[in-house]
Length: 196
Image (cartoon, rainbow, N blue to C red; front, top):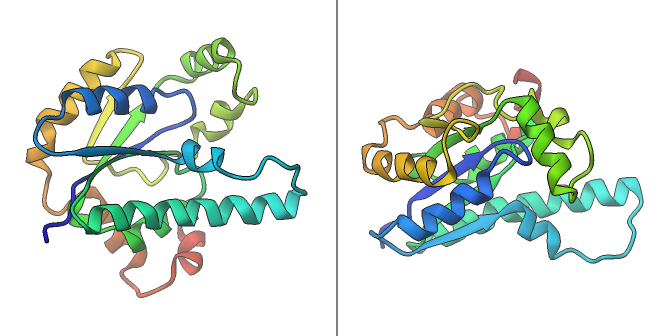
């Protein structure tokens, strides 16, 4: 069985990842794609209030489960569009350890901070300052197969670029290069966090 392709969109909150993912679902015509978003996994969690330590533990388990769900879906041949925020080093390292690097097209979804703040305020459904907090964190690994800027291109234009680039994935992919950089020593993701 051939593993599915993974289009991995990484960017801050309000950067436009979900909008790009919806456009990709509309235009990709050479397979059956599923949009898996970390926000959707978070929304499945119980609604009762959790203490800080319990919440942190639950969020970590949720994200680890999310990563493994992506891997499981792709392993049996499903094509996946991932919508994620890699704002903590361990998240990227965990993805590098569970996803097949050669199947991942890693896309940086960028947007200037001032536009992120404007979008965040207009949305009204995110904590104020969330995008600003994530801004310097999500792209600090510095390596993508492709990048798009949603302040200068519409979600449809970004999706079209990704569609055109998908069959041209480089070898090695950005995920393979990042895996070599961070995990080649055989360290576990937790042991490598300090190196990022």
